[in-house]
Length: 581
Image (cartoon, rainbow, N blue to C red; front, side):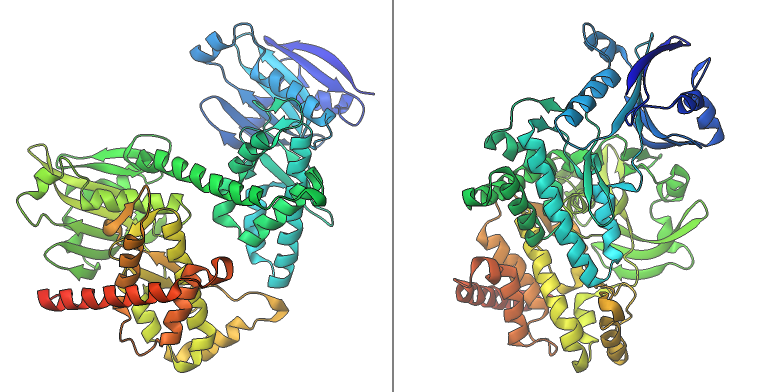
């Protein structure tokens, strides 16, 4: 039988649940508390308290002791919180009451053990840790190393478990307003179990109607739309539908509507966060020197950037740098950046001032360096692969931006797409080329689905990273052997990356003409390539148009229009004396 006991220590009033399966034993209470109160400072000094999550308003600790294994959530009060708290209970007590109410509705959640409220407005919540439980997002990432057959089984089972769990929430009238995978724990084993956590702000009421259920599902689906396939999402939906209403009440319009609303919600979220990389926040900061001004990621130490900011052109003359490009408009080098004891290869690009009007145009339009920086973080925010931009700055003269400089991470062991295809021997076509075609087509379809375009989408602006495979003509047999690993394990995948994002744009509505221009630009790079046949190009178009999902209606029109746009591009380049590639 669980009972509540009261403790008052050092200005903190505690209510501790003792006894039974949902409370603390007497020995555990003595291990958590001493006459001065909760031993949090003692655990922090000894390293027994590990910070799991922290922010301005709260910090979460994991404390694994000899007896109890608990999480301690410390809510800090501020001036706004003090004014808001007049007539209200503390955040820790509200979460305790919500946790008990959610558990009472049959929804698996954490076991709340104690709540403490201090005189200064701070509050504490102690919950028991679940053994062998992991956040849903971390659990999914750990599955990447599973053998292929086992991975398919686990993902299928997990999708159905998620669907049934969400139906249980909504049927029980539980609305978790911050329903992201980090707030759902997975307990593995023969039977997967899910637990809802971080319940402060969770609403309780009558079973949710479809509009409220749909809005809550959209919040979670925003994350899964970028990281799981349609088959897994459909499997989760069918499990939700059957658990919630029964198989006899299936409605084909509901999942389609859910997907449309999820994409619209993601588009709003991405637009709202695109400019975050130009501000000062927990992820980004401003950098400056006597001659330069710009932005950098927060985790890049100031001393690492100091030599660049002191003289932005100096790195181009450093010994050991590798020159990748040098032209009137831009120069690109590869060098090593030291971060403490770590040394990592980076790419450093200079955008030159080509006309006297460029500094004045920069007053009303973002510079190429800024566009590359913003779109780099924008693509990564949207789940699209591109090297991480580390910093961007400009030389400032008379208050005007002049030369721009962009520092990005380097994709390891990568080559340009055209060069990669050219190095493949005929024996590598089945093993490497066709899956690569499928991947590039799906990648560009994903780019366009997110209302983005890349005006300069040529083969040189797509990098292929062998991810452990060094594929040359003489190495294709080794690749084939690697693809046929034992135990059904998947071979290391090839990775395709977008680079040189000066021509990337965000659109409110991406029209057919812009999509055609992107595809024709890529086709121009491979127009007469001996390593690609018309069948390969049709395979690309088939994957891009998603025949298996939308049918093949209209593909001939796309084919003719891409051919016409390619011919026009080639003729225009020849007329202006530009390279066709």
